[in-house]
Amino acid sequence: MNAPHALGRDAAASPARAFKAVLVNPYELGRQSFNLAAPAALLKAAGFEVLCIDLALQKLDPASLHGAGLVAIHLGMHTATRIAVAALPRVRALAPSAHLCMYGLYAAMNQALLRGLGVQTLLGGEFETGLLALAERLRDGDQGPQREPLIDLSRVDFLRPDRTGLPNLARYAHLVLPDGSTKIAGFAETSRGCKHLCRHCPVVPVYQGRFRAVDRDVVMADIEQQVLAGAAHISFGDPDFFNGPTHAMRVLEAMHARFPSVSFDATIKIQHLLNHAELLPRLREYGCLFVTSAVEAVDDCVLGYLDKHHTRADFERALALCRAYGIALAPTFVPFTPWTTLEGYLELLRELERLELLEAVPPVQLAIRLLVPQGSYLLRLPGFMDRLDPFDPGLLGYPWRHADPRVDALHLEVQAIAMRMESAPRAEVFGEIWRLAHAAAGRHAPALDGAASGPPLPRLSEPWYCCAEPTDQQLQSF
Image (tube, rainbow, N blue to C red; front, side):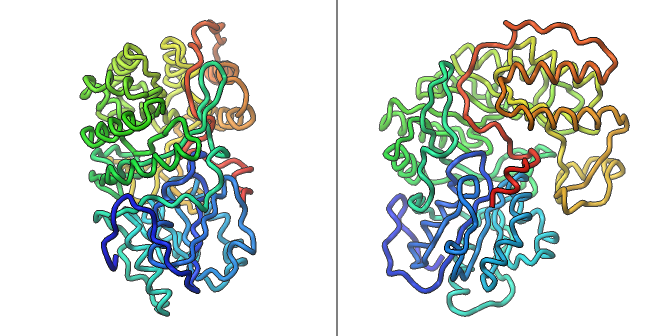
């Protein structure tokens, strides 16, 4: 950056300049994107005209892209990247002279593919500094090749994110309470990256075991503006909220003191829930309604291949701890892997029923297939490359076929059900998947105990997931 910026203040109202930057977010779990709002604040403070487009709620249209000198698209996850690649031809048609940039986790991981599609600049990690430097040199007439680092992990001096150009917060995913009532949900980040090296995680190839905190004053300023816009709940989007537990708890303490009625949810690793169990009562005191945790599997062998650093027994202990303190646990899974068996899939379903988690798991979670993107640490497993086909640009990963074709067939059937019954009650969809899985294994499906589905839990209204394949509707959003 050319000069330091005061943390937590509003972006300075500089005179508009001729250079226009358009920031595009294809998909971010139904949330109002920090990764549009944060760079928008920095670019506006430097005098740029900035327009934000969120494809979850908006279209790519001629008026928005007219005159753009820079179009920068955020690739924070697999689903978003698939949508962005499909949208590129329309972006080019509407902004033929604009410099194309993609930023975020999947920009760095898919360098060869994206450059082959004509993307001129790719920025990974803490991308804001590079994005600002790119805009400044483009404004100054420098159209040369990329000089900004592909991956930059240096600390960013954030301003308060500028959310003024985004759709109204009430239009985004909302909190659904057990009684069916809803609340407007905001979205904040207190950190990026992760200290852990789970082999299948897309954060790992970029951050390689490091994480970066967002200054508490900036986080609080962002939360405050969203509460003033109607948010009664904050969803923290950190890859792991307890990568820096001291920082996280200071943010929560400040938020609860300022807004005692505002609730929240966060993503926390099973290992961290156990290691920091003494913090769970304070989480609940400060308004935690539920915790999302990447459980991924209930097979300890699969968990070992993924290097998750927890076991099935650890998952059950973490679940019991959360329930003891009145916090719902929302586990996520990667049920279809090269190591999955039909019996193993049935065991996952039986475990969800036994633990009364049917209401806690969106059906799409039972259809997730292991992705192997460029740079994945899975490729370091001895012999794993032998299971894979060559990299497939359409898939954004290395395809694999299961040794048992019945497993691949079941995956396609479960995926179809998850899409077709997206809005149906979770227990009803689970019942369909239960019958399918037993039929695939040549077994009769025992009757499910309706009471075992568990009580309704607080959740966000967006059921899709970051590593799920996009739906036809998402691919046509632009």
